[in-house]
Image (tube, rainbow, N blue to C red; front, top):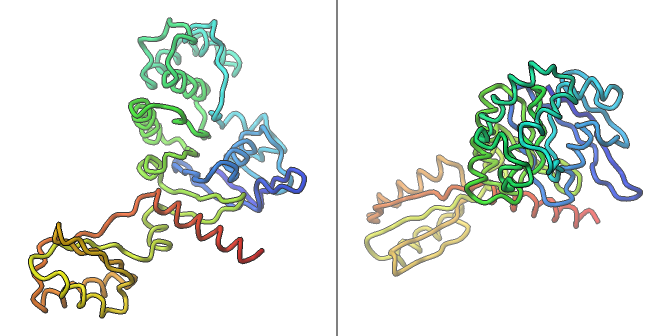
Length: 316
């Protein structure tokens, strides 16, 4: 559905995007992660036909977004991180205006507007002036506007930015529903755990480069090699510490006497990890709880960007 080859954007000497190559299948929810200035909005602007690349190509549903932008827009719904609303319009008037802009007939607009308002949970605000809506409601109205022409691809730049926890939850639920409708969705966000919950894949951008791509668990396995294990024991903790310290795959150990808890970091394989715990039981250690700490997308993001920055420094 989306094909990007060698996409590059320069502003003078500043490289906003460098040689981006990406292929996204239809129906996939793909999340872009990156700090401000990493290249997320630049990528979205190019895909949305709002910005010309310095070099490279991008296709949406087989249409070149640079050479044939009018045709590409038929398949695109773009929700920018900052957007304007017409405050003197009521909600239904606002959607009617955009529907007419896309060439929808009056009959089609009259049918679609109630359906879209129901989708974004704004049915009871149909005749409310836009300027009286909360920020979260305006975000959902903008999403409804993005959907007015039933695009195959949605490009959502920070759709939950500035929302309170309840509004973020509402937005997340709507996006999950859109996924079930078969939409291909590109989404960027700084709210990393929510991306992990919604996305089939993520891509991490750092200084204009795509430095990692895959599902969350795959990236974790590749980049978060040291596993964190928490053991609760009934007995002598120091003796257990000495046992685990002797294992070459144990990289660090932390002890909490108060909680009778031992935490160690382990770089070995899963089979070696299981063998280590079996050896501990065979030694007579009374372990009544063993838990591996799950790493979320926040941990992955910090780890891979730190690694990318270190590599960049070494190159310099």
